[in-house]
Amino acid sequence: MLKNWTVTTQPVRLASDGVLMRERYLLNPKHANHKHSEALISLFGCAETSNRIAIAGEQFRLNQQLYNRRGGRPISSYAIEYCLTLPKGYRPSDTHWTSIVKDCCLTLAKLCKLNKSEFAQYRQQIRAVLHQQSQNGTKGSGDHVHLIIGKVVGNRVLKELQQKKATKLIKQAFNQSVLKHVGIDHRTYEPVEVEKGRRLSTWQYQHQKATDALEIEKTIKQMQVQFDKWLRAKAERDERQLKRQKNRLLKTYEELKAKNTSPTQTENINKIKNEII
Picture 1 (spheres, rainbow, N blue to C red):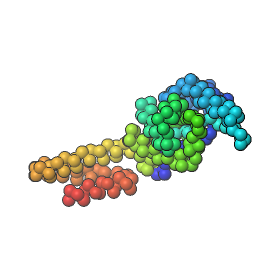
Picture 2 (cartoon, rainbow, N blue to C red):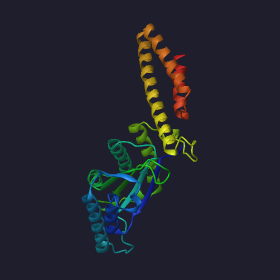
Picture 3 (cartoon, one colour):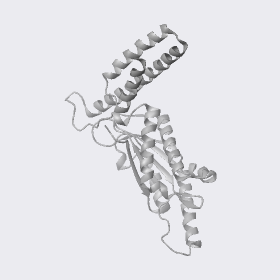
Picture 4 (cartoon, helix red, strand yellow):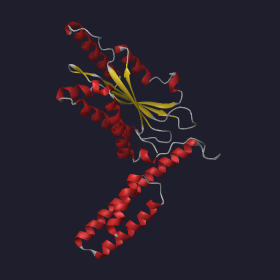
């Protein structure tokens, strides 16, 4: 079981040069780091987005030098980069990743307490590129998204983006969004440390775990639908429907009891069972 899906945070250094270097890296299939990459897919923004981030940073730096009489070191990092990574065996669609990135960006925007004009600029300074990785073997990471967000918005630097609480919040948002849009719970994932037999590769094992987790989520949703019907029948005093849905709920409960559900899932399942007995 994992505490969180993997999120790493780092400032994009070297001012505008650093931002443009990251832009060139993100979509360069010939880069040495991309030898295990099967596809590099732009989700948000383009090269012009990186230019906007660089220009906003340079303008802020110039204003610092012109109007800041107290001195101090000028800003040298114009953006923050987050890397959202899933283990091998998991491949959300481009649409799913787009929704996940949106959720993460909105969470960070709330942390920064942006006003209307700041939020408008913030949205224009989001660059996200999906790297789909080879799922075979043990080398290389799983599918991941490089998410770059401009730190300079209006007349201020979004220092919150680089603080520990931002990393903590984006991890929580990433966990919840993957579960919401893909149906995979990080709490049901078990990292593979050894090969699971000669006929079952690490990737196959992880893929099976991902499939099992998705099946559990589907079955839980089915149980919730059955429970809603049971509640409706109870309110309408429909004894025939009440008995039918109770039998279905007990059957679904037995199916889930044999599966590797998380503690939270088990608690919710038991609540439903106790309600109908």
